[in-house]
Length: 421
Image (cartoon, rainbow, N blue to C red; front, side, top):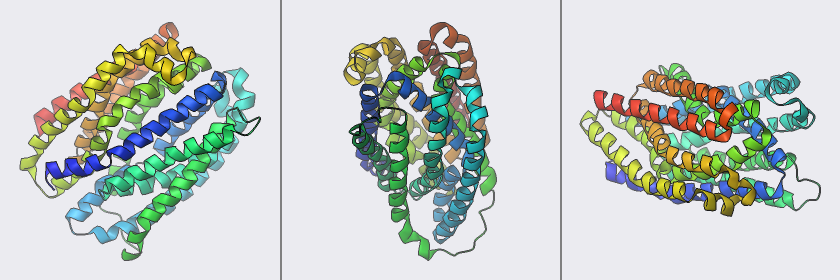
């Protein structure tokens, strides 16, 4: 597949990605206008905790599937994919169920260490209710990433768009019920949405399953690659969720609401123009490497960075200049206090996009440990910055910490690729 053909196929999935982004922000706008800020802050404090835990819970297996499936296809072994997915789905289901049982009983101790004492009476039942969504997300992640590894980019984005759209529809329906304007509204909506999206993902993958052998051995190095990818992906995702966790611990729940429900999600709109391209580049680079087309790699990397810059820069400048009107329009005047934080994060999406691209390319080329190491260097900088700046600057300090860490990571990734490709 040429780079032009790849760019076209990735671009076809773009409208679905934009639809998912639009639905995601409508969800946050709905919560901002229908729920008290403390309820929104409590939900996202719990939600961020589970999202961070899910990165470790999956053991990197969905990410390893993205790397392995195009390699099997390049080697003429695609028929083994369904058997591999069967084994991994059983493993993740059993492991996720066990972890949910442990979390159910450890919830009081975990929440006492994580949240302010006054929020514990409401947090404990909400935490346990959210375990259902946490369990469903394990197979959902696996099936969705399998679609990406098969380079079925439209199907991959369709599942993501459907998932968040179902959250929106469920939230709208629950808002009409009296007495449910609390943290239980988003908890219920996400659980129902994950169940629906999982059914669709299974339906999209099911035609491939009967053609595979039932018993196969895992590809050589699969588990070690999975664990390395898990560490790298977890670290990169933590850069997005860590601010909310640190604000919940070092700041206040209203600050979590302003940051996680307004400034951060509004700024991450800027990830969407390039996100379909970045999502598709990982399996594409893995296939080029498996086919030993090394002559195309350097030009492909350069074109990839130029494409991401062209898709990101104009919108980042626009959002930074119009930060206060955009926040007020989307979330209401009460959230305009986060305008400076939003403006800084809008500029920070440039290095964020570059770091996502660099991470995908390095992993596709097989530099898994190096890629993960660079991410964790940035994570360490982000954690130190949050610890130093949040007590003084609140959400703005969290934004400075994350933007600085992302810039360092993206610069080092680019330097490594320039030296090694």
